[in-house]
Image (cartoon, rainbow, N blue to C red; front, side, top):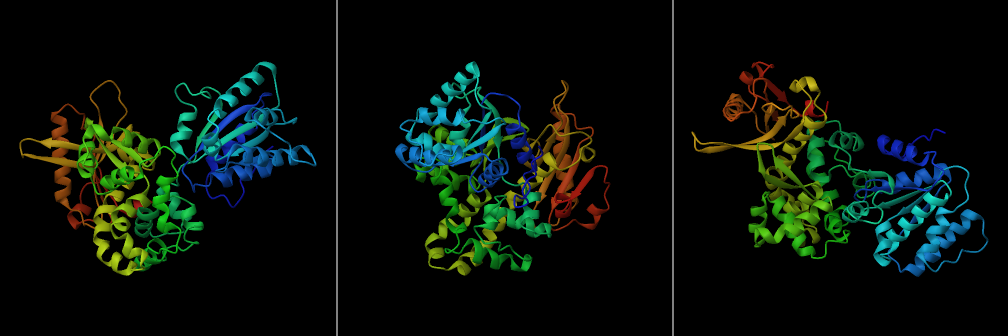
Length: 485
């Protein structure tokens, strides 16, 4: 049976197809799936729609004591089996047995959403699930497709890792990501690529931020962008106003919120190295290993390796709204609460362009090179894409390269497919290309294969006439239209 994705679910074709494939597996035994992703990505809509389309069972975990969970689940299962009275449970073992033994002749999805809430009050639950699944593998059982879902990424990531009880038991491990920048522009119905880039630098690709959080209030034009920021983002009456704070509060492993906010603020301020972060918050570099790891596990920080110096990774905040909050909102929180958004934004726009939009534009350019540029653009399929720093001893300087594209390793000297520079709001000219040529020569001297390296200039403001007239065989000129093509 083909299950058509409901029209109210935007995009998510791949995720829907994976879920349908999982629940339609012809195994006669119960099987386990795990779905995760940060909040507000549409996981509940996906799984709820799946249950509605198949007659499945949807159980939503809440912050409650086990006895209340037992009662609520008893009511749901009673409705499923046609019992006039709620089923009475006194243990998780009895509930799991009842779920996995539901009578059904065809695969039946059972979703337990917000699974971390249930485990918070019953740490033994994953072990109970393991034992119940293993028992039915040996003796047989109903074709139940049990899907555990949660938004606490650090917890969900640990469910199937290491020596966790459920390791090796899942037939599906699906992460529902934020919408990529191109799909996000389509979702927000923004056709101007510059406006799309600015909007994405604030709200990223989280679907709920448009639908629920600003009630479909999207910036109508570049001229409307400033007003939109004030009325939709810096407005204390809109849910988006406090969202960045709540993202941290929802992660169960983030106990010292002040420390984690400070680490995120350090990275948002441009202190991307471990030493820079430690210096910003007044700690030793060895003392921030744990918060960095926790924030990475929570999906709020990502480590970006230097493509040309492997031991020099940099950190970046993965959620644009968090960067916007720490750069613009947190320093002026009291003013914003007193509804002085116009004053705050008037003095913060320059900081927004340099501290938020500029770095975000660089990351978008790297994403384009990794995910959207066709193989002909670089002469080969990219193996790795990132940033890089090259020391120039002769000129006593160092060159930061925004976009470094390397070919997959092939046993010989590492081939550099592309070196690129990204400038938001700056017209780029031959001087930028000369700097990239210098870096290409330095890399060639250090053993890299740069014979077919292309140079790329990314700019939202355009290019000088001499650069426009240069050879396209060597230089890629990438404006916003190319990034969104």
